[in-house]
Image 1 (spheres, rainbow over the protein chains, first blue to last red):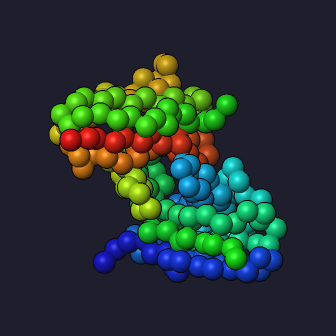
Image 2 (tube, chains in turn brown, orange):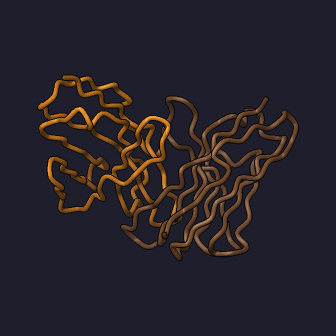
Amino acid sequence: DGGITQSPKYLFRKEGQNVTLSCEQNLNHDAMYWYRQDPGQGLRLIYYSQIVNDFQKGDIAEGYSVSREKKESFPLTVTSAQKNPTAFYLCASSRGTENTEAFFGQGTRLTVV
Amino acid sequence: RKEVEQDPGPFNVPEGATVAFNCTYSNSASQSFFWYRQDCRKEPKLLMSVYSSGNEDGRFTAQLNRASQYISLLIRDSKLSDSATYLCVVKSGNTGKLIFGQGTTLQVKP
């Protein structure tokens, strides 16, 4: 099946630890995105990548890092510098051209304990 | 000012009602527009793209007004299953950024 896969679905982390969230797609999409959603809020853009080996900061990049070494993969690392990391993290991909929609993974719920 | 703004609601309507949501965007270089639906604790899913000429999909109609920089979604004959959060999404033509509004919550009651 073609799609976008995020893992794990639930993640618990101790304060002060870095953690990496996985995002893989087999849709042959060029563009990939990471969003954060807090309860009752909309999606806020963390990082996005239009092409392999290139990515840009979104609106809330501080405390996060990404890499795009392969077209299929766009992992997000939540570092210890992120002051309030507990949230729902969503990864998306799209063909990247005009009028093409984005498809989402099922998300990862990160809780800092 | 946020790049994409929506009235968060909630909109509480009876079954069968017609309800309209508006969304405004600030970047005139915005290129593509979409409405997504998000159910509680789930990922967003595409409801419909929004084209300059307006488009309709069953009970749903989307309109784009580039001059005034707003997008609308009209839902006719509301069903209980329409209860969800509706997200306005704008893609920048310059940067490729995909920006979401904060969402509008709709609750359809029997």
